[in-house]
Length: 113
Image (cartoon, rainbow, N blue to C red):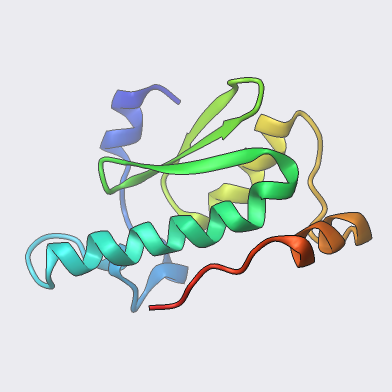
């Protein structure tokens, strides 16, 4: 998806109801929204360390998924993230794979708060 198309298609997903991601327009503290999103991305990146893929924020409305090879995908919402991971990795990533789970167990936990 090109950057412009990514900007034009941004509605919150029902799974993000009650989160900062569901807040569109006025309301809520933008600083709190930014901090919550940054923390969510930090948790996602901790989960992705074993597969050498990173996720970053783009303009507070999209997630940029980038692999070690430089392959990149732009996604609107968290539910689209896993499909993008498979694409960027050029292979399916099985979250129930024993080796993946073992690698996750070795990752330093992200601080809460």
